[in-house]
Image 1 (tube, rainbow, N blue to C red):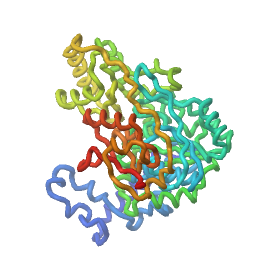
Image 2: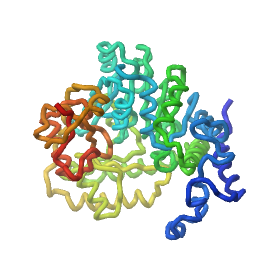
Image 3: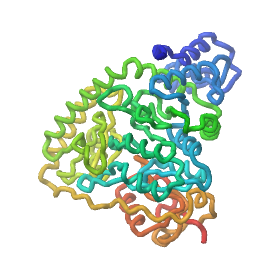
Image 4: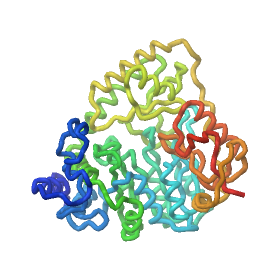
Length: 486
């Protein structure tokens, strides 16, 4: 029996507590907004700070929910078609780490894509698992990381029959969807558990033009960033499980390890409200976004030298689907790199987009996107098309993604090994002791335990030269890299 998605039990419980106006001798110290800096209070108003609470009477305990948090999580499970759902206040990263530790332990294998988020590496470090990396297909013409085929996964399983499970990403930062149905079926045929990184795909469950989501296809676990696509506050996410391949009690214990003991009730309330809104109005919200994105795509692709990724990718580089709400723009025919396009939009037009890579600028539409914002983007791109038309040669994909380096130690062993810092070029052939990942999108170029190669050094030099943020880079020693001490 479907649950009443109009209900928001946690939000309502918070409002009830605030209405009681107790004398606040509990943490946090600002005491329901009284101690907030007046400048912030003037800007934000007082009510939001009254809701910044802890595990006081009637508000339940995230780590042992029995009241409104438990009810809110049950409603989330119902909305996304899971058996159980867990609210996350440390982002989807906390869920991915907990899920990996729920499937594998030290010395056991798990199959993961090479283009996974860096939180997967942290899950490998915490669990001590042995990663079996799957290289995704590369769309050479467009410089895109594509999908993973079922055939490739089955061939990897044939050589790693003892793997305990698989983690896959869909959709990617660029909106690319893989063959999740095939990957899930192949994983279950080998007795493994399937973890879906759906950080960018939680909205797919509420519109037939976007779904079905991984849970509907049989995934055992899905980790979703509701703040990315469903309107909750930044850092708030949900982990769902279905079936009996995930040990729920072990997962709960893992989440106590990866989540704060002082969870933000602002984040928790935002999850409760976002779930209700998407369950009740998701289709009409997504109808509007689909209309906006399609109209923008038509106008942008009509501009000389401008390309917008879309469903024409399906069938190429193992790409099984594409999220039409995401606007991924290329000006490569104008000779403008995605990095440059990102900066142009920001500096010359006051348009802040998600990120740029060699070819593409990624613009993320969300439930708060306004038509006037899309119109500003279109006007800016019209101007850029005029400014750069005929001035430069078109860009050609230079194959700058380095080959995956060989793994010489497990990520855990390398992370906890004694380390030294050396200049990158002197580190070639040494074992890397850290993660380096351009951010966004947070996909590691090298992980702990892997050999540092010339190709890796060339790629890092190029990224630094283009001014791209690199997580793991030491600002005080930008040419250095941590390696395992010999």
